[in-house]
Length: 115
Image (cartoon, rainbow, N blue to C red):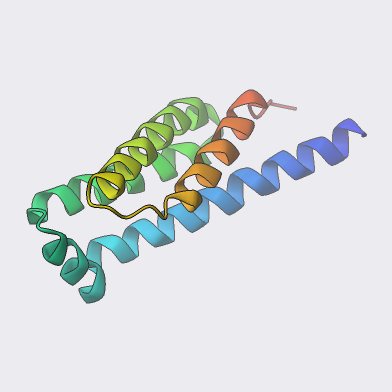
């Protein structure tokens, strides 16, 4: 595989994951259905705000080339926390969190390089 294609693929993956996580985090912060879901699970409101706020910051850092490694570590940590919360409440559907985590890890192994 050519290095140019590899760079395109990793950059595309980084931006896809970063933007999707950023938009989902914003939805988690402000969506009435997400607020209701968290309340129904018995979590205090601050947990939703900490998770979504942390994801927003981490996703933005992940999209900034010079901070992508720090943002990646933070995203993987937050995804792991979210997965644990889901599992503790009997919600076994954490597959998307696993996929997001692995996509972030792949992007972290190919850090953006300056031309």
